[in-house]
Image (cartoon, rainbow, N blue to C red):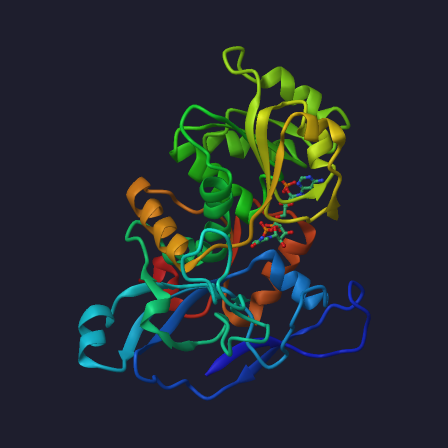
Amino acid sequence: MKALSIERVDGKPGQVYYPLKQVDLPKPTVKPGEVLVRILAAALNHREVFIRQSLYPGINFETPLGADGVGIVVETASPDLDKAWKGKRVLLTPGRGWQDSEDGPEGKYTVVGGTVGVSHGTFQEYVALPAAEIEEAPAHLSVPEAAALPLAGLTAWRATFTKGRVAAGQNVLITGIGGGVALFALQFAVAAGATVFVTSGSEEKLTKAKELGAADGAIYKKEDWSKQLRGLLPKSRPYLDVVIDGAGADIVLQTYSLLKLGGAVVSYGMTVNPKVVFPMQAVLKNIELRGSTMGSRREFGAMVQFVAAKGVKPVVSMVVPGMDRADEAFEAMRRGTQFGKLVVLLDERGDSSKL
Ligand SMILES: NC(=O)c1ccc[n+]([C@@H]2O[C@H](COP(=O)([O-])OP(=O)(O)OC[C@H]3O[C@@H](n4cnc5c(N)ncnc54)[C@H](OP(=O)(O)O)[C@@H]3O)[C@@H](O)[C@H]2O)c1
């Protein structure tokens, strides 16, 4: 079967950009308790760019890339599993080592694809994995939309609900709304009845975010963006309850005065700077900075159920037809031009126009 991994070349972390390499691997076979999934489509997350830049821990050049995937169960290890799963369209869980603790992983946590710990990625034609690591894909999603959901959806779910405790009626700020995780956080918070404000680097993305239910937004490139945001807050609730942030750097400095007493900044990433300044003024307001990373197997199931129940549709920015053209999706992510997820079809049956 065909798979996509990276080729080792010389270069320092941050300067190197490992080229993509298509490889031929043996088709996996199922062990007891496992199912074989024919992958229809896989999606990118920022981590794949970090992997190619050698800025990610535990890179493995032998393991195909990709944590996000949707496929069809084509074979299973037993008649019971056949009955439960054969022919179903499923999502693959993007991490291992975290069952259901709210605090964090119980064991060594591993993200699937391109790293040590798990031997498959989703950029391969077939994956054999335990039946416990799949969820039925919500029926209202197209194949690219389903591929877009797992990792970013799970990260947004935990950041929004488990760590952010977002509830109806609250004011929430979500930064960098063009990002994959940020967009899911927007859709989830809106579906939960919160009033959502956003930031972005472009007016066009702010407009698109409003179409998805954001109340308003500001451009983070403008120095006074947090001042502008203050003017947008409703008079009846003139503060933020929660900030959900993937940028890091000065996010607490920019928002502590907008947050309510005891409000929270949930940080799921630090795209801009891997350090966050935490000023004394935030301490005096009892503000909490809460780290959030992906989520547990239980949270993954809850997120997929929520998406099915609320009819949430992942935003797909680009669908690339075929593994041969995966670099086009990587380039879009590097340029930051995307609004939503970047999906690569691995099987032409993934293209709904060809179904
Ligand atoms: N903790 C976890 O488990 C976890 C999981 C997934 C991702 N992450 C991390 O979260 C971050 C985002 O991941 P992703 O996959 O969603 O990436 P992505 O799709 O590439 O999104 C990155 C976004 O960052 C925004 N951005 C750039 N400069 C910014 C600034 N100065 N202020 C605010 N936002 C800014 C941009 O927003 P606009 O396009 O609107 O300008 C861009 O779309 C990465 O650091 C990633 O490593 C962590």
